[in-house]
Image (cartoon, rainbow, N blue to C red; front, side, top):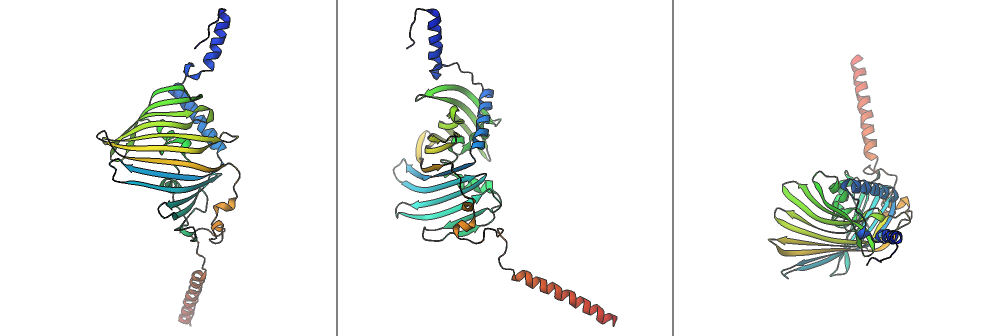
Length: 335
């Protein structure tokens, strides 16, 4: 309730302070152009500050068939490290029924010596799966669903959809932009409509997303429906962050619920939940991004280069022998 005062000037000043302290009553000056300007600047600042991070935690996935015929659950331990553009992604998928690691993998991207390792149990040594990964972005995209999508990439994605690509698209439309008060914090809520281009499919996404403008516009909450060829996929998500001195958004807890509807009937539901166990922006040794860290050979050996030089020597001797043979034949003809 707004307090009443008899003196007009005093009342006016107090009213201004009161309105400023209650964001939901503040004058909304956010146009699409202003929002895009602020968002782009926030992403640049995030990318600059976000040069060294380490995130470790557990991703749980639940799937429930609403008919009651099936229910499944699995967990994956994630250890993600980023150092100056180089990424290391360690995944360990757990078999919950037998309480053991079913598959473990390591992938290092973004440097000259990209590699991918795999093992079937913690007792087994890692073995090389790939030494040279032709397209690092494609490989990361392959790994990102859903492990990185609902953990590391949370600040700037909506259930796997990069926010920047969406809002910069000509098919994206702002319906409403406003500042709201959420649990005592100021948020920027964007209601949108997005006709997503997908090969051979018609896809329309409509919903809303809340950003935290004080923390580089990290995604805090969203609710949208993706209509694909008449079927509806609804996504509801929210995230809790921990911020370092540079205001780098490290996801502490992430929850996303995906529900599939057909003819307005709920068919199945998936829940993705990430719980962080370790968040850090401390420096990470370069040695952590090498094959030597896993006991797999000389780190200075270029990926794919042969370790056995015998074929080269054999080829050299053959070439020399062929040359001598040609010279002797010519000398014999001249004689």
